[in-house]
Amino acid sequence: MRKENALKIIQNEKLQNLNWFDDHKIKPNEVGIREKANKWKVYTSDERANPISEKEFQTEGEALKNFIKRLRALNKIQNL
Image 1 (spheres, rainbow, N blue to C red):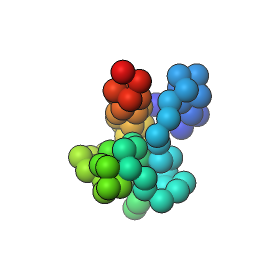
Image 2: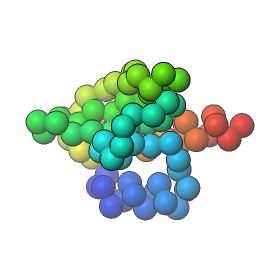
Image 3: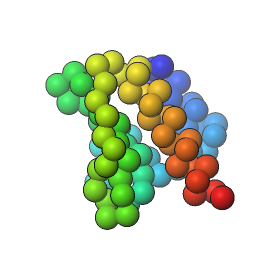
Image 4: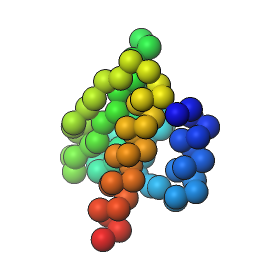
């Protein structure tokens, strides 16, 4: 997956509660993605805005797939 594809999915599905490559300080209950030293990390934050269940990826594409998967799950839970 490429960034452009991920952004289209986010927009088309109206996904919320995300932190796109550290575009803001971590907030409670969101999914984030970041890149550092050619490694990509995807995390979910808890109610205190602490990153939890962080997973590291070797490629941006795999990280973006996981990011979208987690984001869809979080939005589904929040819309129940």
